[in-house]
Every structure is written in C-alpha cells, then in structure tokens.
Image 1: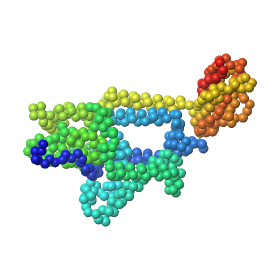
Image 2: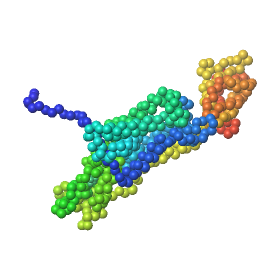
Image 3: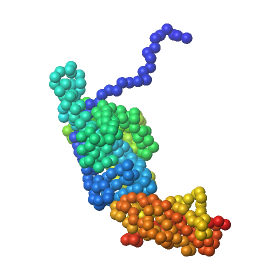
Image 4: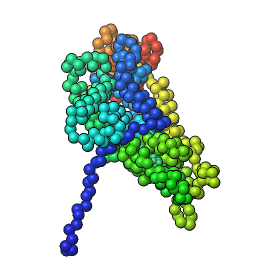
Length: 504
Ligand code: SF4
Ligand code: SF4
C-alpha cells in the first residue's frame, strides 16, 4: 500500500572519492623511506647477484629454475623432494606476520606490503610532476591545457616505466637474468616471458597508480583477518581523545574565555596526509594501514603550538581505556582535559604511557617461540640433509624370473640422485643377499656383487639393475635386503631396503 510519498531509493554504492595525500615529514615518514628503499633494492637487485656454484650449476644467487625443478638461494639448493623447506619458510613467514600484527598491528601493511611500497613510489612520481596535495587537486579541477597534458603524460609514462621494470624484474627470478634480458630486448624470449611482463606491468600500473587504497579495502583479505590477531595490548595508531577533546579552533581564545579545550586544534593535518583518506579521530577503522603518517603530521602541529607530541600515537587499547577513564568526568560523563593535567598544564603521573613490557606477553612469546623453533628445526634439517640418495622400485610383473641355470633374477629401477654440482663415482652394492650378483644397465662388466656408477653433477641417474641369486642360497619366498650407494670420494652413504622375490 502506498502512502503517496515518493521515497528516495537507498544508495548501496558510493563512488570513490579520489585521495590526494599530502607529503608528510617526520620520523615515521623517514623510516618508511628507508624501508621503501631497502625493499625496492632487494626486489630489483636480487636477480642480478651472482653466486659461484662451479661449472655445473647456475651462478645466479636466487633462482627458481622451473625447467630443471630446482630452487637456488645463495648456498642453498632445494630439490623438488625437499620442498618442505620452502613450505616451512612460508609457515615461518605466516607466523612472523601473526607475531608482528599482535605486537604492532598492521605494520606489514603500513611499511612493507608491496601494495604500500609501490603506491608510495607512484605517489613520489605524481608529486614530482604535479606538485603536492593542493596543486594536484587544482590540476584535477583545471580544464585541459598543454601544461596539464604535459604533466599527465610525463606522470603516466614514468609510472609505466616503473611498472615494466617491476614486471621485468619478476621474471628474472626464473631464468638467468642477463641472458633473459638480452632475449627480451632482441625479441627472442619465450612468449610466456612477454605475457608475464605484460600482466605484471598492467597490475602494477593499475594497483599502484589508480586503485591504491581500494586494493587494501576491497581486494586484500588481511584487513579483515587482522582483527583476530589484535588484542588489548597490541600497539595501534590511536587518536588520544582523552587529551585532544573538546577540539578547538583557537587555543588562545578558548584559554582566555576559560572554556575547557583539548589539544586538538582541528587543523585536519592528520587527515590530509592519510593515504587511506580517513580521519583517525573517528577511532580505529578497517582502512587504517598503520602507516603512522598522521602521527608525524600531528606531532609537527603540536610542536608548532607548543604542546607535547603524541596526540596521535601508537597506543594499546588498555592504555587508551585507562586514560579515557581518567579524563572522563564521573558526574557529567564527558571528557574534561583538565582531569589529566596538573596546575602547570603537565600530564598527571597516572597517565599510562608506552611500556616495552607489552611485547612480552604470553601470546607474543608463544608466536615467537613457534617461529624460532621452526627456524631452528629448518636449519637443523638443512645441515643434516643428504646430498646423495638412492630410490628403488621393484618390478611388479613379473616379480622374479627363473633363468635356465635355475637361478632367480629380480629387476629393479634404481635412481641415484647426485645433489651436488660435482661428478661422483658411486659404489652400488647389495647387502643381506648371500652370494647375490648384479648387472647394471649401461655399466659394462661381468655380473658382480657391486658396480661402480658415474653420476653427473646435479643430476639423477636412472638405471635398470638385475639381481641374481643361486637356488642354494635362497631360503624363503621373500628375502629382505638393501641396496647401498657409497660415494667413493666422500664416503657418503645411502641405503634403501627392498625385497628379493623367489618361488616358495
Ligand atoms: S589513519 Fe594514520 S596510520 Fe592510519 S592509514 Fe591514515 S595516516 Fe596511516
Ligand atoms: S593533526 Fe592533530 S591537531 Fe590537527 S586535527 Fe589532527 S589530531 Fe587534531
């Protein structure tokens, strides 16, 4: 039934408002520049580092060699069956992220996430060509002119160059970087290389240049997951309204009239530097990446008006709640900034401040313990792993053959893995089969109790091995025995147990 009044349709979609973050200065911004320089340098330079592994292995320090199924990282070489090392490192990275988040909230997002780092880099370019926040807003609103076109073309061209370099650097992790670069430039690289560069160029350009905070807000699951990682003792960027409220636009005027007022002068400096486009004074928000640029901006303002810094700070919820309780007038239930200051305007001693001991709570200690234990276990496994192994597969059909002299023969597929970049001579023998002799495919010589097998560097050698036993030595239908592979130079040994089948 209609009441005759036309109702406005409810809007479920709100168009994005473009954010023009102002350049911030201060200690957190400096720290972010340093982290940005280090992370970008690691990403772009690593594929060009060399590591001498001898003539039989690639000399690229970090290489994911998909064709030969190897992963190289400096002195470590991982074979496919050792993938658990990579899995272990990924688990360590996950636990490390839990640990960092439980201590300092979304520090990963604010400082080291590639989305943050590349957006920051794209912002540097934007600022260089178009100026800081106000100039960019003005340019956005200005009609098209030669100057606007020139600035836009230069900005987008530089963004695209960075994006191509980013996509290009990624594929260098998967092949010899100098060779691949030459092939790329001369048009001789595989089409997959060009396609990968094209996809990564597009994503870098779109995510870093255009989508920016939308990637964090709508595409990344981490902002939602982080809520479960935080607790009352995690450090998060907090507006301390217990000392900031009530806000005033004119401190002197408020002081003269005796009006109660906090430290916030409502200058909006914290809002205009925010890359997420939020006002931290509205409380904790999912969009906040904990970059702390609002802390820098506000500290700068506090310095200028002669107030203590830290109106916006890294604080724990417990400290914030305690300070809020201190600043709240029990009768009116409103904030009274005079309650947290003494006669001289200094903060009273009961105010809670940052305490290093919050890092040592059960949750963080547990994460740290698991992280360190995993790391030590991986290091131990790395130091103990075999660099030469054999694996055996017994023939299934037929499991044995009776030869015309009455002896019984079993066939085996033997693989010898030489996991070092040097040639080896492997002494292959059987143990536990009385009087047994063997013949090995590709290895010349009369049947004997052992064979000497050369194995190329960093290779797997597959062999057909036939083991023969005379009927007088056969005691049962199935005799367990072992193949033993011994490196003649290093005496490294690997053993594989299997069975010898014979008629019952
Ligand atoms: S509110 Fe502050 S810490 Fe959060 S994203 Fe904005 S500037 Fe960074
Ligand atoms: S920068 Fe500080 S003083 Fe200015 S509005 Fe933000 S919280 Fe208030």
